[in-house]
Length: 128
Image (cartoon, rainbow, N blue to C red; front, top):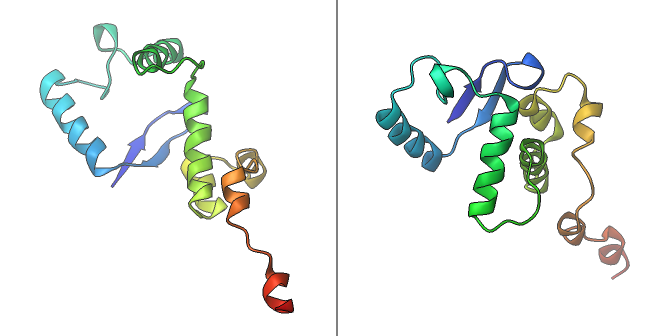
């Protein structure tokens, strides 16, 4: 249940996770639009430009009632943050994001209140 992305950010190939629900939606989309070269084709069958993708995301956010400015990079950051909060090892996140260096991936590891609340003080059990 993964998806191969060719020539993503930095012209790097990526592997990402694919949910069963997304797979079903992609199947419906494919049957309806029958893309020729790219799964998501823009005008004249060309790939979407980064600007077009940003505009599509902006319109989707507005339709969903999201008032905050949303960017593709924010989705990437949120994806990495959620994986980290679920306990996914940083090395796997690094691979999914296509980072060469773990230092680059560590940027996504900002401390969240949710993660901090799960930490238990080991000294409490020691002194009880």
